[in-house]
Image 1 (cartoon, one colour):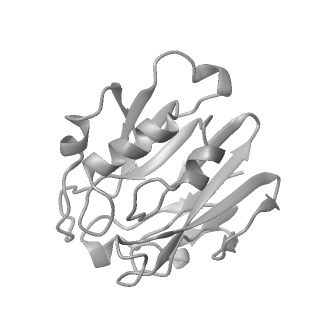
Image 2 (tube, rainbow, N blue to C red; image 1 turned 135 degrees about the horizontal axis):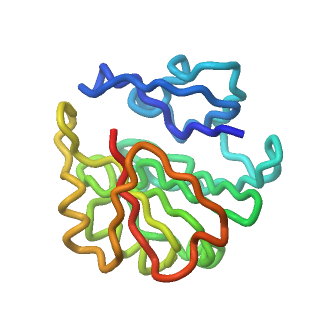
Image 3 (cartoon, rainbow, N blue to C red; image 1 turned 30 degrees about the horizontal axis):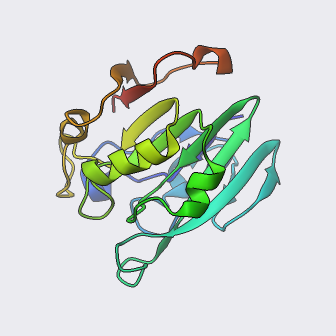
Length: 194
């Protein structure tokens, strides 16, 4: 099964358009840089609402969290999807704008992978990302929502986060394959290429 999280169109934010085929697409919120389902090929099932339970063999749990530090009054809320299958669990924090709530910390202590925004301005920044990481202690952290070449959004580069994090950093290219048994040893940060 192939899953896409928060597809973007690329052009509206100054980067290369998405090219992906998927069985399932999760959309965390209806902002232009997260909801470009039309760029996902195939005939994917699209999840745009909070859900808890099974979807096509995946165990899914959703946290509805503020997109900003004002309880969502400025930018609304985001759906942070936790997806689990075959002994692996992933939590996608989307454009979260707050520090980790107790409810999330209580339920998400054994994550395989945490996808976390680090660019600030519209989301949490590097320092807040560290607080999430310390609270959840996932095996792998994947930074996202940071400045890259051509991006028209004025957010911080991933290096601002990497300078603060106390984990081994691996630059993994465009894709990585792994099994649960591969995620042992010291926690890591995986930085993907565009």
